[in-house]
Length: 247
Image (cartoon, helix red, strand yellow):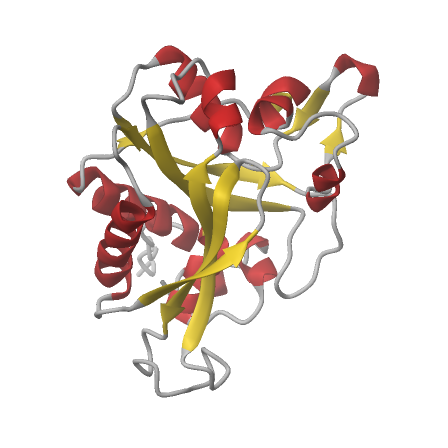
């Protein structure tokens, strides 16, 4: 008698699971998902984001330029260009997230990849403040990690926001008591954020005297590593089904 063949079901990749879950949480809060090209122009990737040519901040993004370089084409280093493109095509008030793949010309190790998935968010309207951002992010992280979190904002610099902040989250695993996930500090550095720079609003055709808003950006790969206890980001791109089917 012939042995029946065992058919296995397809499996959703953990990063795809992350994207679906994140999108659902923000959609419930009234955010729209926006998309844009991965092959981007220098204009949208840098210039409209208050990073003109020869600005030292460009060194913060290790860029893959496409030949010939003088054509001004590159692989996007962040999904921030999506925000500008959306503001050009839509009038405030608006609230979007821009998830997608980005590229950085850097060495690969356990916490860095030349390609990775990023999540950026943007809310523009009248009288929008960092307090609104803090409330949105607290709700997101509580839903995403399944426990109450506390956020703290530390001053930082990003050319497209002013003021800029680093966002730390109380550890979802130990509730701030100290563990291996938060390296015994009780806090996890989770993303960069801030109030959208008036120059960025103006470049996108938004009246900066009437509207303001916040923006934030984080790595979806990092979210997956934290949530599932993955210690090497390269595993997410290995194609090893033994790894993928664990999630």
